[in-house]
Length: 122
Image 1 (cartoon, helix red, strand yellow):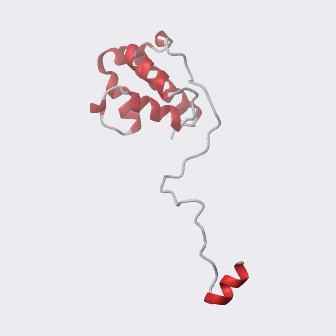
Image 2 (tube, rainbow, N blue to C red):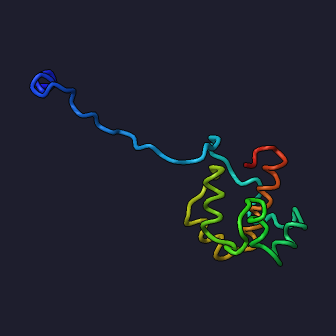
Image 3 (cartoon, one colour):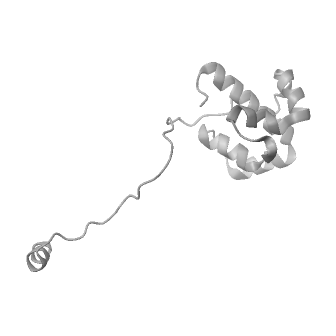
């Protein structure tokens, strides 16, 4: 059939696009991982905990080069978790952010601090 199509029309059959081009920044591939510290490990770093109590939105935003006006949000936690391929779900991000916003931001900040120390923060 394909040979007949080429003979009759004098051209090759149209190609089929299988993969659409994507625009994104090149990001290192990270294996599935866990949080560097637990959600309730607030007392392991008192500086982060104190700042988290009084200025928690700016804790993470400053490290990520973002505005602290967004506050602690499900989107911020989900973005961080997916960037580092940390296991979890948007549902767990919602629950943690809704019921423990200070603990959530402190956990992200401690995670950033540890990743910086390990040289794996980008």
